[in-house]
View (cartoon, helix red, strand yellow):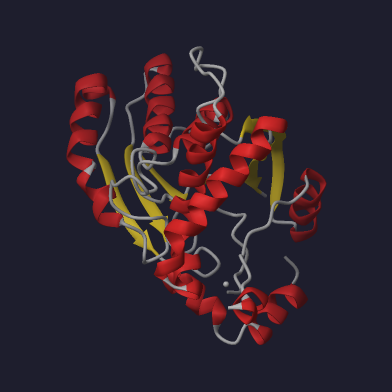
Length: 298
């Protein structure tokens, strides 16, 4: 995003930049409408890009000449069962490489970042079992691992200079620098979400000039996360499919919609959305388009 666009949002948003940061969060807890219960699509995306993540971590760790300390950040970690998947995959890649080369594993520091309204308590409750699993699976092949929360917007400064070795973000950077949703309310609602074309991403990175692109790829996943290659028992049903997609979108966008329109419309809104998206998907299998980019600092 260029400086003119960013400044225009700040000047015309009437404080909505800060407002969105306070309001935007995935639906917390572990209930039926929670993000934790409705993030299967994001899990599929993470699994599809694992080879890129693993290859990048291994290449970087070799390039840094097997450092004793390795610090990483996951920007937009959200909450729920997906939160620590990326952390595990990074650790798994480093452990595998150390086993192959005979090097001692590093001390690993992991910062889980999201907006302050994120349900970090749910994330932290996962840590004892996560540490126990690492010890059971990896034994002494995994070094000390310290996982901490880092609340704040990644559109601002989060970490000291030269403090991170690797930064990861999945399904997060499409949230723009923000703007915020009776008929007048609809006119003033702005969902801060943007999906760029792959050439736009390439152009922005090259124009900014701080990074070299190592890999830039695209892939698609079905809008209904249950409709995937691994689910051999999937049978399309427009009601069930509509509910699946509706729950997923609600878990992501409910906080913004409820803040702008009020809580009372939410249940009816997503019931209607489920019916409409179910009808749509009965006629056309809609897909999510995803961009994977791996960059190294110059």
